[in-house]
Image 1: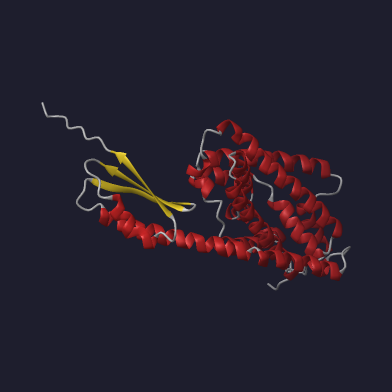
Image 2: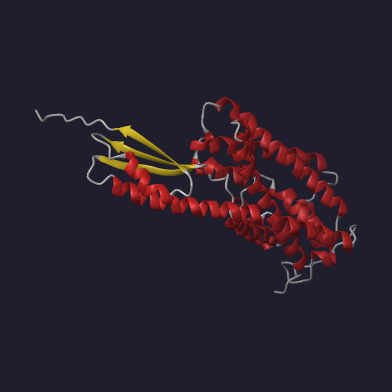
Length: 331
């Protein structure tokens, strides 16, 4: 099969363009019903994602990804740019903007009763605050897969898998949770993760729809110059986010190195004592070490001296958890 052909082997024609357009675009006589369905599913997906993140439940967050309809306006934007549909670009971006704001607000609102819960202690929350270059690469591949599955009727049943592969609603509800917890520094990391996925999907989706022949078959209302400008903007924005993603990736690498070297040093420091290492974590500008045991603790100053060159200018926090030993005699 050649690029630019539909499932039955013929060229991508106007009928195929209309089929995909009906799937992705928000217009026509069914616009009101489509918006209601989109809004209802989005609110439900946002609620599921919020509670899943607060419960630290991977399965629940995955469920939110399947329910979430946010991929539709994003892929619709890519399709509209590819086919030169001026109105489609505008309506898709409008629906997308409303969806993004709604998702963040739902995450913020539903997390209010859980203000006593510290979100920085939740793995599912914190894992979405430091996007890396690998996330951009995954999003590029997902955008390619999503556009291909949408344009082919014989593989459209793979779309739920594409929804799971990309993270759209969870980062936005994550941002809402963190804004509500007065942690905007972490919330903007979640926003960056969403923007990374958004731009990658639009970029690869536009490319895929063009390669599949939709650009040639569509009736354009957007000039070639405007279309090229839109694509150039998406490419430029995608290139621009490589800088913060690279910085974040480097920071994750440094944190991993610090944790690994600190773990080995602490274990050597505890040799001969009745204490054992529980956890080593990096927290902003410090390294937190938790040990548990009883009896005399080895000299903390000696540990700090051993770790000084490994902390990369961070402060050291040492926490001890007392361990109680109860011996019950055999009767």
